[in-house]
Length: 150
Image (tube, rainbow, N blue to C red; front, side, top):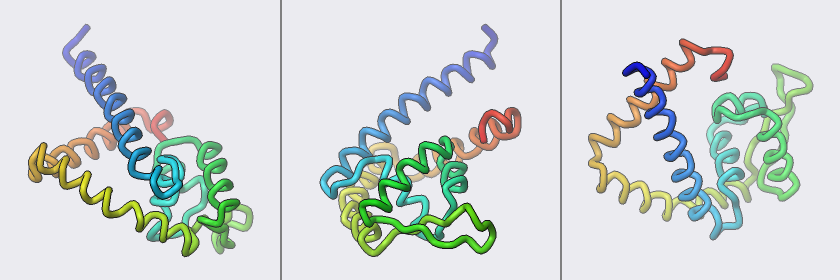
């Protein structure tokens, strides 16, 4: 195996482990307010700007069908609503309701405390560098395999 193969495999395995760790933390943070990690993620994707399901899927790097299922559950529970999309007649926009915003706000104190603990453990500057590196890795994967990573 070449050095590059080892680096790619090591990066992939580390990111897979990180994904599991992040999902575990997200479940712990979301559970007390009656959400799941998946529902929190979808709500979080549309907190600032309503998006169509396909746009949420692109941002999150998951399938449109997965997002559609969660979005429909959020709407059924009164945590989100569909709005007309002026750019596309059939692809409605998803937006949190007041209840959805309130649920995310209830997560915020525990989220802030967890973020501070991670930053204290890693070091604030290293945390920023890590984020920059992960973004660059994601962009590099998009550049070399655009049809696979989107």
